[in-house]
Each structure stands twice: as C-alpha cells, then as structure tokens.
Length: 241
Image (cartoon, rainbow, N blue to C red; front, top):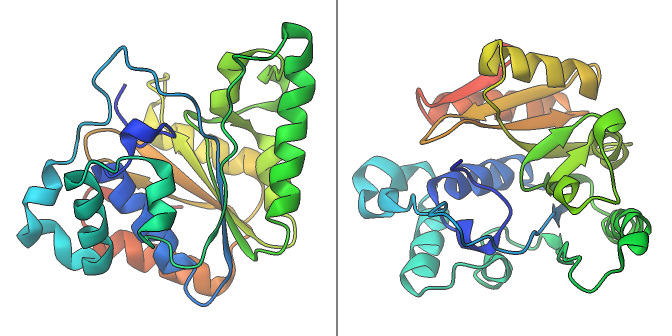
C-alpha cells in the first residue's frame, strides 16, 4: 500500500506535502510538538515514490511555496529522512520526538514494557507543546486489539494514546485508511466517534487515502482546517461533511 507513512523512505512524497502543509497552517502562533512513530525502513516494495508533483510547480507550489521548495530541495539532494524535516525547517521551531521503534535488540519478554515506556517518555518530552501531531506508520487501532508486545502493532496508535496526547490541548493523528467494508467515509466517521466528541478530520486522496483526525480542536483550528481542505482542491475533504 502507498501512503505518507512513518518511515524515512516516504519523506517528501505528495502525502508529506499535504501533511506538513496542514501542520504549518494549524500550528501558526502555537508551539507544535511532533511525535514520530518512526519504524525501520521496509525495502521489500516501492512505496514512497510519489514525488512527481515536485516537477509540476504550476499546479502545486502555490499551495505552500516555502514548504514546496524545502521538500524539493530535500528530495533532489537525496535527504529523504525524517531528520531533514527538522534540519531544513519545514516545521519551523517545532519540537520533535523521534526515538525509533526498533525492537531488533529487545528480548521478546521486554517488548511490551519498552513500547509503553517509549510512549510515556515521548508524551513527557512534548508536555509543554500546545498542539501535538502523532504520525504512526499505519494509523489508529482500537485499544482492545492493540498488543504492545508484538512489533507489528507498533505501526499503530491505540485510541487511548491519541486521547492522552489530546488532553488539555489539540492533537492531530495520522491514519492510513484501509479497504474495509463500508468505505472510507464510514471508516472516518467510525474513528471520529471513537476518538470523542468534537473530533474533526481531513482526508487526502492523492494516490491513496489517508486521514488526519483532529482531537479537541479550538474554533479557530476548526475554521482553519476547513479552509485548508477547500484550498487544496477536490482531493481533500473535511469531516464532518
């Protein structure tokens, strides 16, 4: 599956352009914290190759000229890694938490405790930020299906972690849409209900479907998110519709 998921090799693709454009808009005048659920690269497929938009500035650049130029420089200079997002200033003065979710040196009996500690440490590190973005590789999962001792679940964020990040502030959560029965709209509406009252979402449909759930948004953030979706054209949708 192709998307803007949290491995270095996806950096700079068209999903990143929408993602970082959204964060830049919604975090304006706020202290942004970014929690990267950074999973080791999986090189068995060709995901992350959708950077052709960078060769079409007439169509794409005006949406966020500064960001477009930053991502184009990163891709052309072969700096397709998460550290370069901070180094090139794509998100201004954001605070980043990006301890890699790498279990290669962990005993199987230690994995669950390590994963829980990983989240506690990241949450504490971003405690002073008034808006937080979480970027799991595959997106959301229900708490009753999340198994912290199994590495494959580390590509997901359980609902309880999303809600913890949103306590007394706004949190934005990335989700890679599935192909489950009922369609993408039904899936988005179901997650909005699970995440809590007031949750809104944006869906980006360029090359694949991915959603950004915004928990505990202020009225200003809600207004800006809706305007952002409108400006980015027919491949962007704001929820509730």
